[in-house]
Amino acid sequence: MGADTGDRVARCRALLDELRLDAVVVSDTADVRYLSGFRGEDATLVVGRDAALIVTDSRYVEQVHEEVDGFELVKVTGADLLAETAAAAAGRAGPACDLGYQADAVTHAGYRALRRVHRGRLRDVRRRVSSLRVVKEPAEVAAIRAAAAIVDLSLAVVVAEGLAGRRESDVAWRLLEEYRARGAEGESFPTIVATGDHGAQGHAIPGDRRIKAGELVVIDTGARVDGYCSDITRTFAAGRVSKAHRERYAVVLEAQLAGLTAVRPGAHGRRDVDEAARAVITAAGHGEHFGHGTGHGVGLRVHEAPMLGRTAGDRLAEDMVCTVEPGIYVEGDAGIRIEDTVLVTAGGCERLTFFPKELQVVA
Image (cartoon, rainbow, N blue to C red; front, side, top):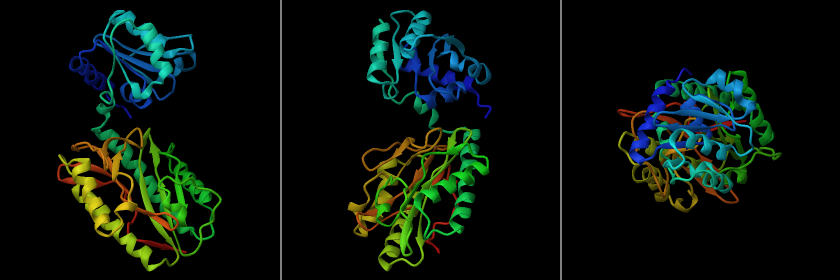
């Protein structure tokens, strides 16, 4: 993608002063990629005031040479990557340096390895390094936009083939085939295809169940381009569905449009966006049937900051990318969710997913 990783590392170094640290160990794979360009696994970074190290083993040495500039390679031979990373950090910043680490990306065993080697203060930096990824650069937005366009086209093809009589898993597989045919690296996450009462499971796993005429079908899916994700949910009618289902669908659509209207720079994910969408569903008598948050950030991960939840939220800023995805889930009956990926703009938001949102009746 040609990202300016030097600028990203400089912003990471600025965190050191703010957090009063001498160096930080970066082990979250998305953050490793963001800061260095390295796309593999089993690598960690050390970002210090005067050093930038990438620590990995022999399996990834050539890949580091191909993908990474501006980081010194430290090749390790032991199985304890974090311990050897801590040793490398101590070698550059001093054995008693104040060292940051990402607790969310480290197992307890990994923490113990860090603690065993590091003699100085060890502090969890929480989401601070990951927060560098929240506001997107133009090239990042372009990748997400391309991933969203692939999904829009692929959904149109796969749904046009019909839904009734097909297995959930077959529909999911066909979407992946279309994504790959259009140049995507793969899925953002395992596609959800859930028919009938299976759709009441928010993260249903598609199986051998066949879609029946008269059922609602929830399809939640996304493609990945250059490492960046898209995310969309549409709920379809496999033939004519009941009046109650159509009325519920209209409520979810109204809630989703209210959430989109609330997205703007300065808006709060919980107090503004989530509450705007949730108020519509609650007023319709379905508050208890909307159990998840209204949205989340999208980038190198399909779920990242900012949060737009019912219990927690982040302040939105221009050039963040997030989803708006309210739903109604009635156990034993059906689920309905409508989701778009959007870019926060100076005047509100721009949809990046464009597949029609009116209830599509598919034979």
